[in-house]
Amino acid sequence: MFSNCKLLIIILLLMAFGQSSQAQDVKESATYLQQMNVYKLGMKYADVTIARNSLYNLIAQDPSDASLLDSLAYMYFEYQQFTSCLLVCLDILKRNPDHMAALEMSAVSYSNLGLKDKALTAYESIYLRNNSIFTLYRIAVIQLDLNRTTESSTNVNILLEKEETKTSKISINSEQGAQQISLEAAVYNLKGLLESSQGQKESAKASYQQALAIEPNFELAKSNLEELDK
Image (cartoon, rainbow, N blue to C red):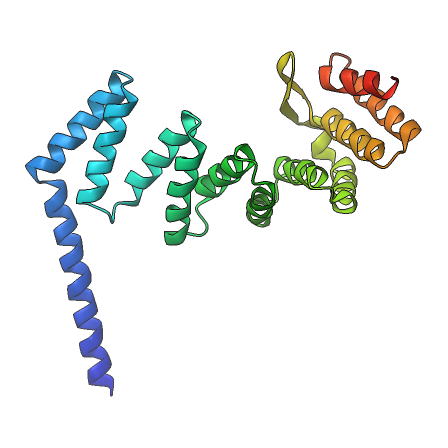
């Protein structure tokens, strides 16, 4: 029994060595090196199409190299090609379910594709790993979008109890563009949206005013307050 196990271990080690040797041979081949040079030139001269095509050729030659898939996902993400980015990220996550960058890119991709249920699941998976207040804020926002107001309200209250919320900044998009504001102000604005959706007009007004007390130039809170007064 022991000798059989020992033999199996030796066979597995030899197989792993053989695969590693094959991968190394591929990386040293003229075709692979040529495609790598083309990829580098494409990146150097900002020719995304050339660089991406070279990446596909490199992946086809060495599908075991996880870093190539990573590069492809980052490329699609940077150029906001969210469908392709998501599909690549899903393949990355099949190999490594704890790949944080792929989890985050997939969450953003789901959001931009309007797949909010899946975006929420992705952000919840991220939160289990990073326990970040920024991730929790995104979860609360999506929960409101999905009309899961009780859960969103619970997370808003958790955020407001954290000291880190008061000292952190976040980028918020509005019609005037992106603004860097206090996370605490963003959370109070979200609290106002929650209260407004439940018909609690006076509470919502107080929350928007609290957001503006923290960030007087917070455009989104201003517009939400104005909309409430109409």
